[in-house]
Image (cartoon, rainbow, N blue to C red):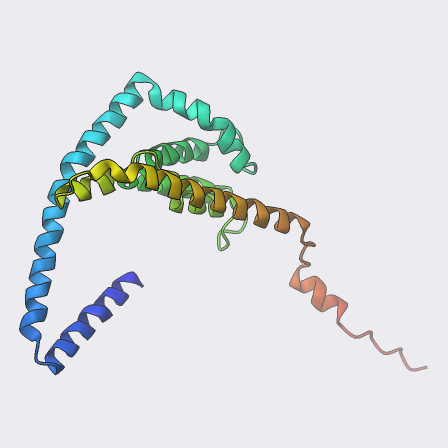
Length: 216
């Protein structure tokens, strides 16, 4: 769907540019945007490699494991319906640890693996479980201590103080994470309080008219 949206936006831009006689400006903007994208990507490589290296050092030295043990009680509280020793909890902890450091690119693969493990516990594969909804909410609104990617982008565009966003980012993500957790708890309580849904077959059977008495 996203690819079709982007294709429609590009096609509409070209059409409107041709109607207004500004095809050349559209072409120049396209090449300028492509050049800026490549420049930003090259600038992000260095900072991401640096932080990924630090994450690997932290993993080898046991810091990530200790952080996971520290966060384990919180994760078990957030995901009460996931078994204690299930592999999904390990991927969830890795995802949350990467998000804390602002490494969204590193957090995404762990989030996907966690979703795949949670799907194995799903009794109805066509409907997301509460644990899957909780993971999606936390991954989207994750609290971030060091916004690594944003700092790198600000450095690439010549910001005099690229790290000034650490405080506002921490405050904003703390609020968003609190709102996500509150909404998740509310929906979980609402789901537990909701009456069980009867199977369609039982409902149809109860509405079936009684057979007429046999004639004597």
